[in-house]
Image (tube, rainbow, N blue to C red):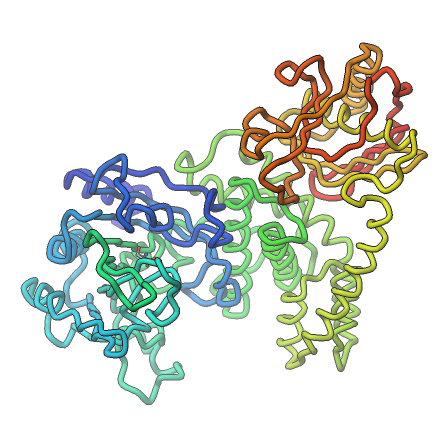
Length: 603
Ligand code: SER
């Protein structure tokens, strides 16, 4: 019987536990305290300091299964093996065992625990790098031979294939980055698949790294023993092992089918897409689209679980691209926009697939809500945008920018759709338009906010203090998901944009209004202190998450003293001296401006 992903997880954990390994919890897809990468892309990411020599609190032998997101692979999604989201099974030795134990253990894991036939396995080793004075890994060849791996199943490759660091080959590594030679194991799906015939490599002899689809890499043992320095490569204090193997790929190999979308970690998701789109996966013309939908929605579900939500910047933009691409692929598949009725079962199936490995009971509702709102909003302009795009014969950067600006078509998506018709556009012109637009909106807002308030009239100052009260009252009534998205004050009114998982009801608005007015009646003093940034975060002062703050910050608090203050906020001011100066506040309007994004006006 086929091994399920649940069983594979158990077998893997048990295997390393029996060898005295401790499980380290996986980190979120958004690395905390690590600004080097946007997303967590490998299991070793949380171990960098320990590979460099720090002592790990759990000891020298570790393992885990780490959810990973590789944004750089988005364009590859659609073939049978690439995904943006995947899970990496990993084990580590921090200066404990080294090559011999690692290769023998992993080999036993594959052949004894999982039952792989050794005829189907190929291994690769590092052939050395003269330029960087790194020698060939003869030791690993000997170990593989001692395991009776056939000599013509052992291949040597250059650093492009058999060297691993987060930055890639030795030449590309920055100083202080750890790296080392590695040894990979490949599964051979067999010549009888004849995949090689259609590949660009068809005239060359096939080999494990040939990319034709016959071989799939299922595990990589990195021998982390070097650090890049100014002078070249230096030995690390410890000889470490960093192993990573893609869970989905191992499942595909166990399935003896190179299509990872046919393993049990995708199978039911694809089935649900088939059902909702009323199309069959076996139909070649549907495969790519269904794989994109399955991968992108899965990626979106995991990103949202870890705190990303759609926006126009960095991670949020990435999530937006995933969801909008999903909407386009679904439309192409079914000739109809994806609706809530279609979307929900797919999201539900994604969460069901993992049962309690990653999700809690109420995750579905929260995650689904963010996804459906983003997609519904895009659906409104999608068909119109596609019509416009269909008419464009010689696309200009300006047209592509207009599609982005007015119809929400991410540049990369338009690029992809144009490519299907053999068209392209001038990226530079697009960027120029984007910059022009940003400069315009910046000038428009510069008048409002210049390191605080440009208009320092008495009325705007009152509104400013009222905004702080409002910010805290939103937390009181709607809970901790609130994030300030921006605010704009004129002499006439205040406007406040915020993110909230809970949709504010009329009742909520009344409560918020009551709280603010009560605080006004209570005649509370308003003061500020200057604190170290860390200290300010520690005492729970609210900050604007889009802003980078200096080491020392000004914190305004509304209360008799800082400790018991009702509101604490990073802010340059100015503010009223006492809340009694502010007139009674009325919330006049609430608008929904995006997925879980609201705009509130008050007078
Ligand atoms: N860090 C290596 C990889 O990502 C092995 O875990 O492949």
